[in-house]
Amino acid sequence: MSSLVDILVGGTKAADFYADLVLLEVEENADLPGAFSITLPVAVTSNGDYDTVSDSRLAPLSNIAITAQAGDGITHCLIDGFVLAQDIHLDTGTSKSTIKIWGQDASWLMNTTEQAKQWVDVTDGSVANSIFGNYGITPDPSNTDDDSGAYSADGATLMQRATDAQFLRALAKRAGKWFRVFCTDTPGQRTGFFAAPDLSAAPANTLILNDASAANIATLDITFDVMRPSAVNAYQALFSDSKGDDTGAGGYFTDTGLAPLSDNSLAALSGAHAVTAVLTTTGADSGTITQRATSLLREAGWFVRAEGSTNADILGSILRVGAIVAVNAAGAIHSGNYVVWNVRHKITRQSHDMAFTLMRNAIGTAPAPSLAGIL
Image: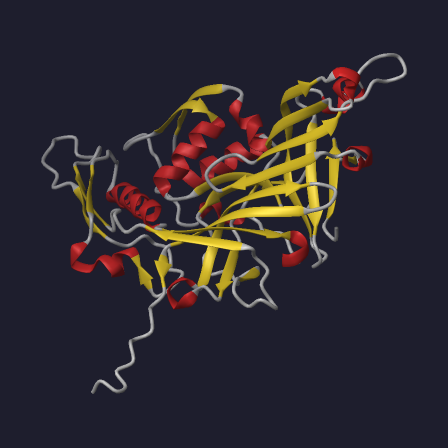
Protein backbone atom coordinates (compact mmCIF):
# COMPACT_ATOMS: atom_id res chain seq x y z
CA MET A 1 0.00 0.00 0.00
CA SER A 2 1.12 3.59 -0.54
CA SER A 3 0.31 4.57 3.07
CA LEU A 4 3.53 4.28 5.09
CA VAL A 5 3.00 3.33 8.72
CA ASP A 6 5.50 3.13 11.58
CA ILE A 7 5.06 1.77 15.09
CA LEU A 8 7.48 3.37 17.55
CA VAL A 9 8.24 2.19 21.08
CA GLY A 10 9.90 4.80 23.26
CA GLY A 11 10.72 6.76 20.12
CA THR A 12 12.41 3.83 18.35
CA LYS A 13 10.85 2.19 15.30
CA ALA A 14 9.64 -1.36 15.88
CA ALA A 15 9.83 -2.58 12.28
CA ASP A 16 9.27 -6.19 13.34
CA PHE A 17 5.88 -5.29 14.85
CA TYR A 18 4.69 -3.82 11.57
CA ALA A 19 6.12 -6.73 9.58
CA ASP A 20 4.10 -9.21 11.67
CA LEU A 21 1.04 -6.97 12.09
CA VAL A 22 -2.39 -8.60 12.20
CA LEU A 23 -4.39 -5.41 12.84
CA LEU A 24 -3.70 -1.88 14.04
CA GLU A 25 -6.52 0.46 15.04
CA VAL A 26 -6.21 4.09 16.12
CA GLU A 27 -9.09 6.36 17.05
CA GLU A 28 -8.99 10.15 17.31
CA ASN A 29 -12.02 11.78 18.88
CA ALA A 30 -13.03 15.35 19.74
CA ASP A 31 -15.01 14.16 22.77
CA LEU A 32 -12.85 11.35 24.17
CA PRO A 33 -9.17 10.49 24.66
CA GLY A 34 -7.39 9.02 21.65
CA ALA A 35 -6.94 5.24 21.77
CA PHE A 36 -5.09 2.50 19.94
CA SER A 37 -4.99 -1.29 19.72
CA ILE A 38 -2.33 -3.50 18.13
CA THR A 39 -2.91 -7.17 17.36
CA LEU A 40 0.20 -9.30 16.80
CA PRO A 41 0.82 -13.04 16.40
CA VAL A 42 2.24 -15.13 19.24
CA ALA A 43 4.94 -17.71 18.60
CA VAL A 44 6.98 -20.03 20.80
CA THR A 45 10.65 -19.08 21.26
CA SER A 46 13.59 -21.47 21.30
CA ASN A 47 13.49 -21.59 25.10
CA GLY A 48 9.79 -22.44 25.14
CA ASP A 49 8.42 -19.00 26.05
CA TYR A 50 5.91 -16.89 24.10
CA ASP A 51 7.69 -14.15 22.14
CA THR A 52 5.38 -11.13 21.98
CA VAL A 53 3.82 -11.95 25.36
CA SER A 54 7.24 -11.60 26.99
CA ASP A 55 8.40 -8.66 24.86
CA SER A 56 9.29 -5.83 27.23
CA ARG A 57 8.36 -3.30 24.54
CA LEU A 58 4.71 -4.26 25.08
CA ALA A 59 4.84 -4.09 28.87
CA PRO A 60 2.30 -2.01 30.79
CA LEU A 61 2.89 1.74 30.43
CA SER A 62 5.28 1.34 27.48
CA ASN A 63 5.23 4.43 25.27
CA ILE A 64 3.73 3.61 21.85
CA ALA A 65 3.41 6.06 18.95
CA ILE A 66 1.91 5.49 15.50
CA THR A 67 2.81 7.57 12.46
CA ALA A 68 1.31 7.36 8.96
CA GLN A 69 2.01 8.97 5.62
CA ALA A 70 -0.19 8.89 2.53
CA GLY A 71 0.40 9.95 -1.06
CA ASP A 72 0.74 13.65 -0.19
CA GLY A 73 4.00 12.89 1.63
CA ILE A 74 2.92 14.47 4.93
CA THR A 75 3.77 12.41 8.01
CA HIS A 76 1.09 12.41 10.70
CA CYS A 77 1.56 11.25 14.27
CA LEU A 78 -1.79 9.54 14.77
CA ILE A 79 -1.27 8.90 18.47
CA ASP A 80 1.44 9.02 21.14
CA GLY A 81 0.39 7.20 24.27
CA PHE A 82 0.85 4.33 26.66
CA VAL A 83 0.01 0.62 26.89
CA LEU A 84 -2.76 0.10 29.45
CA ALA A 85 -4.13 -3.40 28.82
CA GLN A 86 -3.45 -6.71 27.10
CA ASP A 87 -5.62 -9.55 25.82
CA ILE A 88 -3.76 -12.77 25.04
CA HIS A 89 -5.35 -15.61 23.07
CA LEU A 90 -3.38 -18.86 23.11
CA ASP A 91 -4.21 -21.62 20.66
CA THR A 92 -2.93 -25.19 20.44
CA GLY A 93 0.27 -25.12 18.44
CA THR A 94 0.19 -21.27 18.59
CA SER A 95 -0.66 -21.02 14.86
CA LYS A 96 -3.69 -18.88 15.74
CA SER A 97 -2.40 -17.34 18.96
CA THR A 98 -2.51 -13.55 19.23
CA ILE A 99 -1.85 -10.72 21.64
CA LYS A 100 -3.87 -7.52 21.56
CA ILE A 101 -2.51 -4.40 23.23
CA TRP A 102 -4.71 -1.44 24.12
CA GLY A 103 -3.56 2.03 25.00
CA GLN A 104 -4.57 5.65 25.34
CA ASP A 105 -3.03 8.98 24.39
CA ALA A 106 -0.83 11.01 26.75
CA SER A 107 -3.84 12.58 28.47
CA TRP A 108 -3.79 9.37 30.50
CA LEU A 109 -0.88 10.88 32.44
CA MET A 110 -3.31 13.56 33.63
CA ASN A 111 -5.82 11.03 34.90
CA THR A 112 -3.88 9.15 37.56
CA THR A 113 -4.23 11.34 40.66
CA GLU A 114 -7.27 13.14 42.03
CA GLN A 115 -6.58 16.69 43.12
CA ALA A 116 -8.25 18.97 45.66
CA LYS A 117 -7.10 22.45 44.77
CA GLN A 118 -8.30 26.03 44.79
CA TRP A 119 -7.36 28.18 41.78
CA VAL A 120 -7.29 31.95 42.39
CA ASP A 121 -6.66 34.92 40.04
CA VAL A 122 -6.61 32.72 36.95
CA THR A 123 -8.76 32.16 33.86
CA ASP A 124 -9.85 28.84 32.35
CA GLY A 125 -7.21 29.12 29.64
CA SER A 126 -4.37 29.92 32.04
CA VAL A 127 -5.39 26.99 34.25
CA ALA A 128 -5.31 24.65 31.25
CA ASN A 129 -1.90 25.91 30.16
CA SER A 130 -0.52 25.54 33.69
CA ILE A 131 -1.75 21.95 33.95
CA PHE A 132 -0.45 21.03 30.50
CA GLY A 133 2.95 22.43 31.46
CA ASN A 134 3.10 20.16 34.50
CA TYR A 135 3.20 17.17 32.13
CA GLY A 136 5.62 18.58 29.57
CA ILE A 137 2.74 19.12 27.11
CA THR A 138 2.95 22.24 24.93
CA PRO A 139 -0.19 24.41 25.25
CA ASP A 140 -1.89 25.33 21.98
CA PRO A 141 -1.60 29.09 21.24
CA SER A 142 -5.40 29.36 20.97
CA ASN A 143 -6.04 28.12 24.52
CA THR A 144 -6.52 31.62 25.90
CA ASP A 145 -8.72 32.84 23.04
CA ASP A 146 -12.38 33.39 23.96
CA ASP A 147 -11.31 32.97 27.59
CA SER A 148 -13.25 33.17 30.81
CA GLY A 149 -12.95 36.00 33.25
CA ALA A 150 -10.52 35.72 36.16
CA TYR A 151 -11.58 33.77 39.24
CA SER A 152 -10.78 36.00 42.20
CA ALA A 153 -10.89 35.65 45.96
CA ASP A 154 -13.35 38.52 46.31
CA GLY A 155 -15.76 36.96 43.79
CA ALA A 156 -15.57 33.25 43.19
CA THR A 157 -12.50 31.02 43.11
CA LEU A 158 -12.22 27.90 40.98
CA MET A 159 -12.29 24.61 42.87
CA GLN A 160 -10.82 21.38 41.53
CA ARG A 161 -11.90 18.07 43.04
CA ALA A 162 -10.94 15.64 40.27
CA THR A 163 -7.99 14.43 38.25
CA ASP A 164 -6.44 17.04 35.98
CA ALA A 165 -7.96 15.39 32.91
CA GLN A 166 -11.45 15.20 34.43
CA PHE A 167 -11.17 18.80 35.60
CA LEU A 168 -10.10 20.19 32.22
CA ARG A 169 -12.74 18.17 30.38
CA ALA A 170 -15.45 19.61 32.66
CA LEU A 171 -14.07 23.14 32.24
CA ALA A 172 -13.97 22.71 28.46
CA LYS A 173 -17.57 21.50 28.33
CA ARG A 174 -18.93 24.48 30.24
CA ALA A 175 -16.81 26.87 28.13
CA GLY A 176 -17.86 25.42 24.77
CA LYS A 177 -14.34 24.20 24.01
CA TRP A 178 -12.51 20.95 23.27
CA PHE A 179 -10.00 19.31 25.60
CA ARG A 180 -7.49 17.12 23.76
CA VAL A 181 -3.86 15.98 23.94
CA PHE A 182 -2.36 14.95 20.62
CA CYS A 183 0.79 14.87 18.50
CA THR A 184 0.75 16.46 15.05
CA ASP A 185 3.73 15.05 13.17
CA THR A 186 6.49 14.16 15.66
CA PRO A 187 6.11 11.54 18.44
CA GLY A 188 7.07 12.94 21.82
CA GLN A 189 5.99 16.48 20.90
CA ARG A 190 2.54 16.66 22.47
CA THR A 191 0.06 19.51 22.21
CA GLY A 192 -2.53 20.35 24.85
CA PHE A 193 -5.65 21.78 23.22
CA PHE A 194 -8.24 23.71 25.25
CA ALA A 195 -10.08 25.74 22.62
CA ALA A 196 -12.86 25.75 20.05
CA PRO A 197 -12.06 24.34 16.60
CA ASP A 198 -10.93 26.89 14.01
CA LEU A 199 -13.88 26.99 11.62
CA SER A 200 -12.24 29.66 9.45
CA ALA A 201 -9.39 27.38 8.37
CA ALA A 202 -9.08 26.38 4.72
CA PRO A 203 -10.21 22.80 3.98
CA ALA A 204 -7.41 20.29 4.42
CA ASN A 205 -9.18 17.76 2.17
CA THR A 206 -11.99 17.65 -0.36
CA LEU A 207 -14.20 14.58 -0.05
CA ILE A 208 -15.81 13.66 -3.37
CA LEU A 209 -18.75 11.30 -3.41
CA ASN A 210 -20.60 10.94 -6.71
CA ASP A 211 -18.18 11.62 -9.55
CA ALA A 212 -17.25 8.04 -10.47
CA SER A 213 -13.93 9.09 -11.97
CA ALA A 214 -12.89 11.28 -9.03
CA ALA A 215 -14.71 9.81 -5.98
CA ASN A 216 -12.43 9.38 -2.99
CA ILE A 217 -14.91 8.29 -0.31
CA ALA A 218 -16.96 5.11 -0.37
CA THR A 219 -20.09 6.12 1.56
CA LEU A 220 -21.63 9.11 3.30
CA ASP A 221 -24.63 9.05 5.66
CA ILE A 222 -25.93 12.49 6.64
CA THR A 223 -28.43 13.28 9.37
CA PHE A 224 -29.64 16.49 10.96
CA ASP A 225 -31.72 17.15 14.07
CA VAL A 226 -33.25 20.56 14.75
CA MET A 227 -35.04 19.49 17.95
CA ARG A 228 -32.42 21.11 20.12
CA PRO A 229 -32.04 24.53 21.74
CA SER A 230 -31.13 27.47 19.54
CA ALA A 231 -31.89 29.98 22.30
CA VAL A 232 -31.14 30.12 26.01
CA ASN A 233 -32.89 32.10 28.70
CA ALA A 234 -30.45 32.59 31.57
CA TYR A 235 -30.88 34.98 34.47
CA GLN A 236 -29.16 34.59 37.81
CA ALA A 237 -28.20 36.48 40.92
CA LEU A 238 -24.44 36.99 41.24
CA PHE A 239 -21.97 35.92 43.92
CA SER A 240 -20.94 39.56 44.12
CA ASP A 241 -24.44 40.50 45.32
CA SER A 242 -23.76 40.12 49.05
CA LYS A 243 -26.96 41.95 50.09
CA GLY A 244 -29.35 40.26 47.70
CA ASP A 245 -30.55 43.54 46.18
CA ASP A 246 -28.63 43.35 42.87
CA THR A 247 -30.72 43.00 39.72
CA GLY A 248 -28.59 40.00 38.65
CA ALA A 249 -27.26 39.17 35.23
CA GLY A 250 -28.20 37.23 32.15
CA GLY A 251 -30.70 37.52 29.36
CA TYR A 252 -31.85 35.83 26.18
CA PHE A 253 -28.99 34.31 24.15
CA THR A 254 -28.90 33.00 20.57
CA ASP A 255 -25.27 33.51 19.51
CA THR A 256 -22.86 30.54 19.69
CA GLY A 257 -19.82 32.71 19.07
CA LEU A 258 -18.80 30.36 16.22
CA ALA A 259 -19.14 31.20 12.55
CA PRO A 260 -21.64 28.95 10.73
CA LEU A 261 -20.10 26.57 8.20
CA SER A 262 -22.87 27.25 5.68
CA ASP A 263 -25.87 29.51 5.01
CA ASN A 264 -28.37 28.43 7.65
CA SER A 265 -27.45 27.94 11.30
CA LEU A 266 -29.81 26.26 13.73
CA ALA A 267 -30.99 29.66 14.98
CA ALA A 268 -31.63 30.87 11.43
CA LEU A 269 -33.63 27.75 10.60
CA SER A 270 -35.66 27.89 13.81
CA GLY A 271 -36.59 31.55 13.60
CA ALA A 272 -39.65 32.32 15.68
CA HIS A 273 -40.04 28.61 16.50
CA ALA A 274 -36.74 28.32 18.37
CA VAL A 275 -36.44 25.67 21.05
CA THR A 276 -35.51 27.70 24.14
CA ALA A 277 -33.65 26.23 27.10
CA VAL A 278 -33.78 27.71 30.58
CA LEU A 279 -30.31 27.71 32.11
CA THR A 280 -29.83 27.71 35.86
CA THR A 281 -26.24 28.22 36.88
CA THR A 282 -24.15 30.15 39.35
CA GLY A 283 -21.62 32.83 38.52
CA ALA A 284 -19.59 35.67 39.92
CA ASP A 285 -20.32 38.04 37.05
CA SER A 286 -22.35 38.49 33.90
CA GLY A 287 -19.49 37.13 31.78
CA THR A 288 -19.82 33.75 33.50
CA ILE A 289 -23.55 33.58 32.74
CA THR A 290 -22.88 34.48 29.11
CA GLN A 291 -20.15 31.83 28.84
CA ARG A 292 -22.43 29.08 30.20
CA ALA A 293 -25.24 30.04 27.83
CA THR A 294 -22.89 30.20 24.85
CA SER A 295 -21.48 26.77 25.71
CA LEU A 296 -24.95 25.22 25.73
CA LEU A 297 -25.72 26.79 22.35
CA ARG A 298 -22.43 25.62 20.84
CA GLU A 299 -23.02 22.02 21.86
CA ALA A 300 -26.58 22.07 20.53
CA GLY A 301 -25.51 23.92 17.39
CA TRP A 302 -23.70 20.91 15.92
CA PHE A 303 -26.93 19.58 14.48
CA VAL A 304 -25.61 18.08 11.22
CA ARG A 305 -23.68 14.81 11.31
CA ALA A 306 -22.06 12.95 8.41
CA GLU A 307 -20.48 9.51 8.67
CA GLY A 308 -18.47 7.87 5.94
CA SER A 309 -15.41 5.85 5.04
CA THR A 310 -12.41 6.12 2.77
CA ASN A 311 -8.95 4.69 2.22
CA ALA A 312 -5.61 6.46 2.54
CA ASP A 313 -4.53 5.24 -0.90
CA ILE A 314 -7.68 6.58 -2.56
CA LEU A 315 -7.88 9.84 -0.61
CA GLY A 316 -4.14 10.45 -0.89
CA SER A 317 -3.98 12.01 2.57
CA ILE A 318 -4.73 11.35 6.24
CA LEU A 319 -7.84 12.73 7.95
CA ARG A 320 -7.24 14.38 11.34
CA VAL A 321 -9.66 15.47 14.05
CA GLY A 322 -10.21 19.22 14.16
CA ALA A 323 -9.40 19.77 10.51
CA ILE A 324 -11.89 21.36 8.12
CA VAL A 325 -12.86 19.26 5.09
CA ALA A 326 -14.98 20.17 2.09
CA VAL A 327 -17.69 17.71 1.05
CA ASN A 328 -18.32 17.80 -2.69
CA ALA A 329 -21.24 16.40 -4.73
CA ALA A 330 -23.57 15.91 -1.75
CA GLY A 331 -26.22 18.35 -3.01
CA ALA A 332 -26.78 22.05 -2.35
CA ILE A 333 -27.96 21.53 1.22
CA HIS A 334 -25.18 19.23 2.40
CA SER A 335 -22.14 20.09 0.28
CA GLY A 336 -19.60 22.44 1.82
CA ASN A 337 -17.29 22.62 4.82
CA TYR A 338 -17.44 20.32 7.86
CA VAL A 339 -15.17 19.81 10.87
CA VAL A 340 -13.67 16.34 11.39
CA TRP A 341 -14.97 15.06 14.73
CA ASN A 342 -13.81 11.45 14.81
CA VAL A 343 -11.50 9.24 12.75
CA ARG A 344 -11.05 5.51 13.26
CA HIS A 345 -8.02 4.16 11.41
CA LYS A 346 -8.02 0.44 10.62
CA ILE A 347 -4.60 -0.57 9.35
CA THR A 348 -3.25 -3.87 8.07
CA ARG A 349 -0.17 -4.55 5.96
CA GLN A 350 -2.42 -4.34 2.89
CA SER A 351 -4.64 -1.33 3.57
CA HIS A 352 -5.25 1.80 5.64
CA ASP A 353 -8.99 2.41 5.96
CA MET A 354 -10.52 5.40 7.71
CA ALA A 355 -14.08 5.60 9.09
CA PHE A 356 -14.91 9.20 9.94
CA THR A 357 -17.53 11.42 11.53
CA LEU A 358 -17.97 15.02 10.38
CA MET A 359 -20.04 17.68 12.13
CA ARG A 360 -21.55 20.92 10.90
CA ASN A 361 -23.37 23.82 12.55
CA ALA A 362 -25.33 24.87 9.46
CA ILE A 363 -26.83 23.60 6.21
CA GLY A 364 -26.90 25.09 2.74
CA THR A 365 -29.82 26.56 0.84
CA ALA A 366 -31.69 24.47 -1.69
CA PRO A 367 -32.10 26.08 -5.13
CA ALA A 368 -35.46 27.76 -5.69
CA PRO A 369 -37.89 25.67 -7.79
CA SER A 370 -38.22 26.68 -11.42
CA LEU A 371 -41.54 28.29 -12.33
CA ALA A 372 -40.97 28.01 -16.06
CA GLY A 373 -44.11 26.84 -17.81
CA ILE A 374 -46.26 27.62 -14.75
CA LEU A 375 -46.38 31.42 -14.88
